[in-house]
Amino acid sequence: MVSISTTTRHEATTDTVVIGIDVGGTKTNATILDASGTFLVDSMIETPSCVLDGPAAAIGAIAEVIRLVLAATGVSAAAVHAIGLDTPGPASATGVICVRGGTNFPDRAWWGFDFRTAVEQSLQLPVIYNNDGNAAALYAHGRLFGDEAAQRSSVSAIVGTGLGGGVIESGNVVRGASGMAGELGHVHVPLDGLLGEGQPPPRCNCGFFGDAESIASLSGIENNLLPYWLTRYPGHPLAAVSSRREAAKQVRGLGEAGDEMALKIFEQQAMAIGRLFTIAANFTDPDAYLVGGGVIEAAPHFREWFMATVREHTSLRAEQIEVARFALVPDLDMAGARGSAMAAFEWLRR
Image 1 (spheres, rainbow, N blue to C red):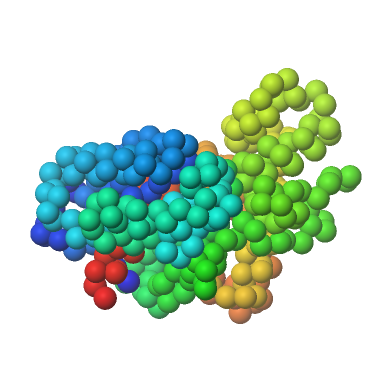
Image 2 (image 1 turned 120 degrees about the horizontal axis):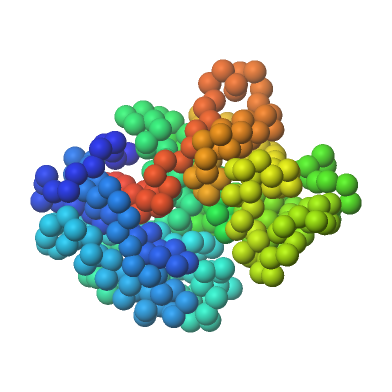
C-alpha cells in the first residue's frame, strides 16, 4: 500500500504523478499524488460535476478539473501516468453505473453506463475506479495506520445524503464479485430498542426497510426520522420549514446547539452505526472503526458526543475492546480524491 505523507506541498518532486478525481452529485474535485507519497495540493480544487446533465458533460467537468489541478501545482500533463476515479454508487467494480441508475445518476443515459472506460478513452490514460465510499475508506485507513496499513483492516461508515462505506482488509479494498461489497448503508440493523414509541420502520430509497442508510443519512432524517420526531415535538421550529430537505439540513446545527429533538435524531443515527459496527465486528473483526461525514464536521463537543454514542452501541467482546480503535475519517472533503489517487499509484506499482 502507498505510504502517504501527512504534509502537502505545491511542487512535484518526481517525474511521475497520478491524479485522483472524486465525482460527486454537485462537485468534482481533484488532487495530485507524487511518487514520494506526497499530495501536492492541500485545498479543494473543484468544478461543478454536471452529472445531472449526462455523461458527456460530466466527462467534460473531469477534463476541466484536471486542467485546474495541473495549473495550481505547475505539474506537466506529461508527468501524469494514471488517473484514480471515484463516483457515488451503486456501480460495478469496473466503474459501470448500476443498470437502475442511482441517486446522483438519475438520467437514463447513465443507466448501465461504463463511466471508467469512457473517461479512460477521453483522457487517453489508465483509469482505476473505486466507488466514493471505498476511496475515502482507503485514504482514512492509510492515514490511520501509516506504514502498518498493509497489515491492518478497517471498516468505515461515511454519513452523507446516503450512507457510504468501505471495508479494507490487509490494506486493500474489499470489492466483491460485482464490485458492490462494502455497501454498508444497505446492511439491515436490528431495530428493537432503537426506534421510539410508535415509530414506523424506516424505509431506504433503495426499497429496504431498516437498513443503516434509512436511519444514518440525510435522506434518513428527511424521509423517516424528522417526520416522526416532529409528531413528538409539534411546536418545534422545523415544523414551519416548508422544504423537508431544508429542514433536514438544519438538524445538525440544532444538534450542535443542544436542541432536544435534534439530539434524539442523532442519537438514533449513532445507535444505528454502532449496531452496524457490531455486525462488522462479528464478520470481519477489523482493527479500526472509522466514521466520516457531516456529523464529524460539526463542533468538537457534538462530534465527541456522537462518537461516544457510536462506541457505546458497538458491542465488542473483551478481546476486541483491547485492540480495536475508533477514529474519524480525516480531510473528508478531499478524502475521496486522495483515496482514488492512492489506488492509482498502487496500480502503477504492481
